Length: 291
Ligand code: A3P
Image (tube, rainbow, N blue to C red; front, side, top):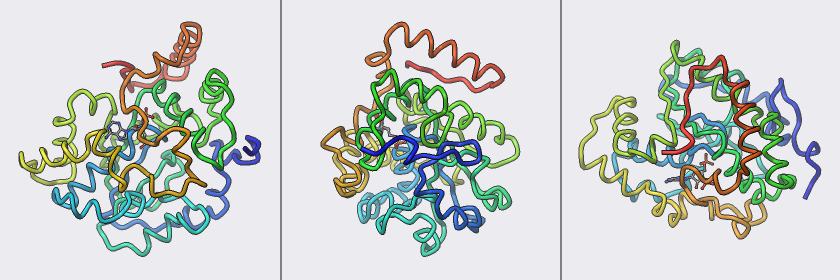
């Protein structure tokens, strides 16, 4: 495993994975189309889940069409650039509209063009504690990532924003602050876990389509955790082991709310809550850590 700061660097105040910032120019100058849809999130917030829901809506509930390719090809990951396998910008440029764009960039690093064109944005978010847990396992699995240390050590880094895409607190607030002047839908992982039907209807309506019962039912069935875990087009098993070693821990790991309770000690939790209050004191954004 490589050293931490050989892999990540401070980039305009946000810790970023170096291979992604190396060719930053092509990301920064990316030209959005009016009909691009952006799915933005902090890593491990339910991006893949929300993405599959959106793609099902675009494909009008046609499961076969969604099973024609891996999710990272149907919905390219904008800033991702990894050897010859991933090249988000290139993939998007070659894609016919309407495009769906995945990104983990905080609002201030999202290419200006998306804001200028006032593209629709779906921001997916999840409570910080479950994100930290999920991110920890993700770290263990991504071969190019350094070892995250023990879980308590990783949580310290998470709190300090010393993880890729920086501070979770800044990230969620960066989009939240923009919500009034843009076409944005916020999706909370916890709401999706609690009442997926309600959230699917919200997305369908946000995309300006009609929520037929048939479409809703198909989406709910196809995007359940169990289905997505067993679907090679959504579970990332098509990524080579040399990049993502799912023998360590699967990408579709648990898919629940509240797993943090199995990982945080009482002392860690108290410290985290204190810090959380500090970081979020000026924010009106409210998260649930259990449902
Ligand atoms: P866990 O590691 O807690 O299981 P992202 O797609 O943003 O990387 O987020 C990954 C997290 O979302 C993982 O969380 C994964 O299991 C969970 N997830 C993916 N698909 C899901 C689904 N259909 N239902 C519930 N959780 C899902």
